Image (cartoon, rainbow, N blue to C red; front, side, top):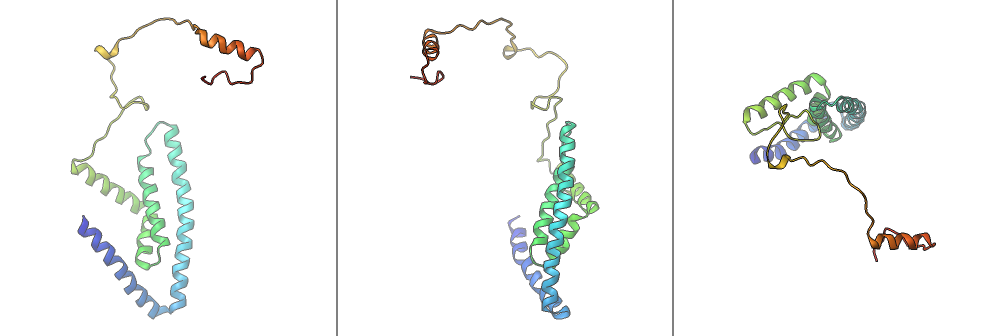
Length: 180
């Protein structure tokens, strides 16, 4: 993993410099800079429009008590695409534009999910109750931690609380909730 990261950190800038020189030699310096600026502006626009769309789908899924897994993948890919398009360079722009295409994101998402599932290092919990991480069961659970005590209560004020309430009724400006 470290070797791959090192190759990316050295290889991508080297490739970008090479492509800049080639494109600059073909279309000229100012046209090259204009292309880089235009792709950054297009990337910002696409990130905003598609990002808002993904955010809307996430909210719809959450409102329907569904996990927005596909939308979260799309959001992560859109974030990476936006960063790549804002980074000056033609290679990063090409990869960024690919990530803005939904069919490419879908293929990449399936590849990553399949790879994670085959690695054996992932776990998934499901529950009918979205507020717990316990498995759904239809049988009553028994055990020492599942004792139910039914009862009523009656609120009884202590002597110090009665004294504080008496002071507050006499016009004292002191907060009745503060301790002395």
